[in-house]
Image 1: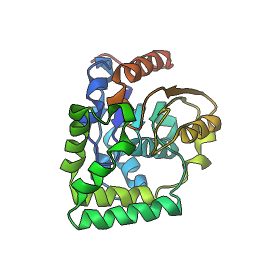
Image 2: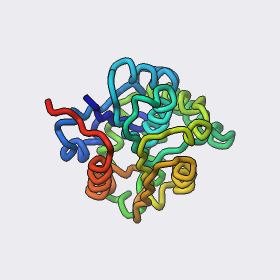
Image 3: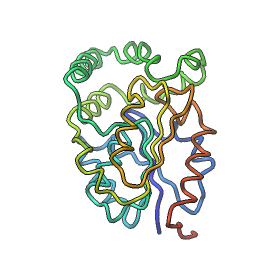
Image 4: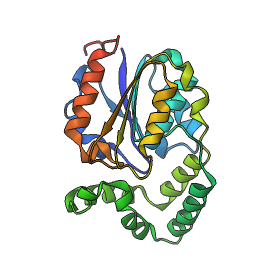
Length: 239
């Protein structure tokens, strides 16, 4: 059976995928993984996911989840039947962003996670949605629930991530790449770079959208995912 695995972003969980889980075909037995909360490196997260989910896989990763998904595809390309990357990047960490993460880690250690995350809301969402209190609070709730230690561990894993650009040209599965046109954390140029490296790819840039695509534009994301899944040369077995 081909299983569809959803990979959340940094300090995120199933809540960021709730609109997608409501419409994805039941026969895929879609599962939201939490390997990012249990392993210390991107490589270990990928190995754990592969061990816990035998057989063929379709991976759908957002942000950090996309980074893990690309590493899974690197470790076991023969098992990947489709790869969807939402608001992600194949690049390694830059020194500039590394310095910003180190500063944030210091604040997390000092018990100031809520302060940092609230200040960063404009980076997570399109400007048209930063006043949507319910949407923003839902995001803050699950990220703050992860806790300071998870924020620190996952940031350090991201900082040490491999350069996925080296292996992307060798992938032979169908890939869907999505990005918000005003994503400030992983700008569209990152998604375009991924698309340029892949032999079989569909690139979609969502208008009036920031980094949290699945929450900001759930209907558009759902439509693109369902269309893409219908085109894959595999079908999940019925339960």
